[in-house]
Figure 1: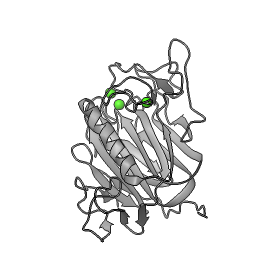
Figure 2 (figure 1 turned 180 degrees about the vertical axis):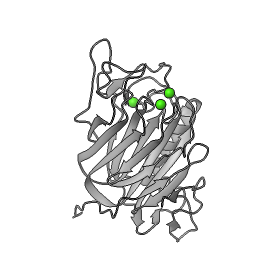
Figure 3 (figure 1 turned 30 degrees about the horizontal axis):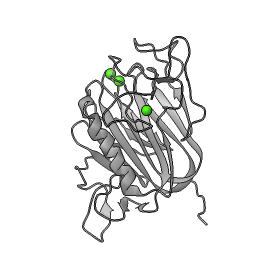
Figure 4 (figure 1 turned 60 degrees about the vertical axis):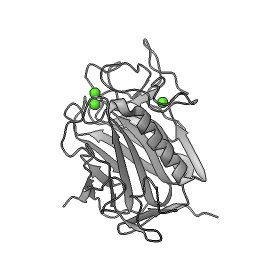
Length: 283
Ligand SMILES: [Ca+2]
Ligand SMILES: [Ca+2]
Ligand SMILES: [Ca+2]
């Protein structure tokens, strides 16, 4: 029987991923994080990227949250601060939002469905299946808070995580992801991205865990962003081994595992991968 273990991380480490123009992947503390960027007009491609991720990992346990089962925010009522979803709980943290897109007093995350909002967040993962690229449904919005704290718990053992981040770092914020105690900082490398950008983020842990906190945040408030299409599962096909090596079986076409090295050889994360790896650890 599979034994549960807690994620072991050493001292807090940080990494930079340059993602505005090319996908990137890097590994810190054995945690592999891959970013696939798309512009607003490339939603179909982004959805296909996520579909490829699902197909390539062949999960033996899988939990998916698209936020379609929650009442979106309307006039004076809706779903806020999701305490229970298929992939855990979501809460805001950091300074409260006060921008023009804020619903209510800005103190809570909101499920929204106003896909034509001018601020650039929108549904990106449809359940039940709708035609690819159709933005019609819900997502979880940061409501301009500085960050979202995602607590994954109660889903059994997992080693692989994937999700969309929509509209990050487009009004001056620097967007970072903290996985447990490991920080992947300023994913756009200081650049201001386009309104409505979408990124598929995949994370591969060095071992299966039964709980984990992920913090998604800007360094400022009022650079709102959305989360959608969250995936948490266990893939026996993928492993990371410290210090800096990750791979999936088969070796070819393994999104989230740092690319496709020569057959029979592990892929040393930090060198050229599927779309060019540009990450480097901070000192
Ligand atoms: Ca959705
Ligand atoms: Ca925006
Ligand atoms: Ca934004």
